[in-house]
Image (cartoon, rainbow, N blue to C red; front, side, top):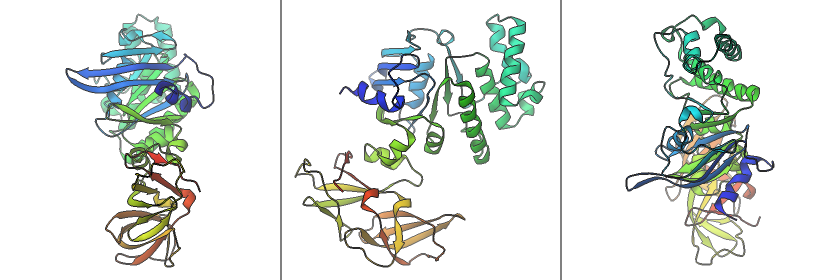
Length: 378
């Protein structure tokens, strides 16, 4: 299977391939001799909410800007609704972009900010008024139309920026970290607003963020990027439960998955922090594969005091973080490796307490020396 074919299916959720969304074929971006984006192939179905996520410098914003036409493509093709837009100006692509900075005109009212782009396109006055009224109703900004941006809160300004995109009636909405300037409470409420907006409008939306919580809560499909390459594409649940490699496993999830270094012993077990752990390996695994990473998410660890043969580890609590309904224990194994545990019991656990961590074999992941996932035979 080609890489292009391999990454199309997860975003389509069982739908037939369509050309109504956004298609990227062999997209490359270089600045002189420095390669930033390395031949990306991706198919985003029409109407999907797709999130590009990854650490700083992974190329997610550059990729979005190339789709928008704000960054020149070094090589490859971009199609929107089946139309090659690779060399078109941004205004001719059928897109609207919402930036991290609101980019509102401070001397204009909200009404004029919303209408400005339409006026520049010589849209009839009646049509402008209709679109501005419709966008304001959707975003509940009717009462703000006569105010200027300086009189608005951060959340209100972001609503206006989104409204300015809505009035253009684009085929594709592009969001470049739109919530980064908001406080934590506003980010949550704006996530809800953006999800509702997608449900009501049904447009294709591509959203860039470094915040994996935003990715998990908003997306139909997530594209995980690292160093200008796609690491995995899939639904939030698929990526969380079946990460393709240790990078994705460690990046998606908060707190992150525990990734513990171990050594393989035969085909049925491995050694970790002085303990023998049950870990059946597939028959086709390379016998030379000795270094194994065991992945266990914090919520899949159970705290106790009795050792379970083959699936428990002795640990010492370094620090306990109480968050009300949840408590996180930051622990250390006998060999010094760090482990995070999500702890919900009412029995108090304190720093320096010795504990035993156990888990279900079905809730573990294994990765080889190259970081790729090994599928065990439970």
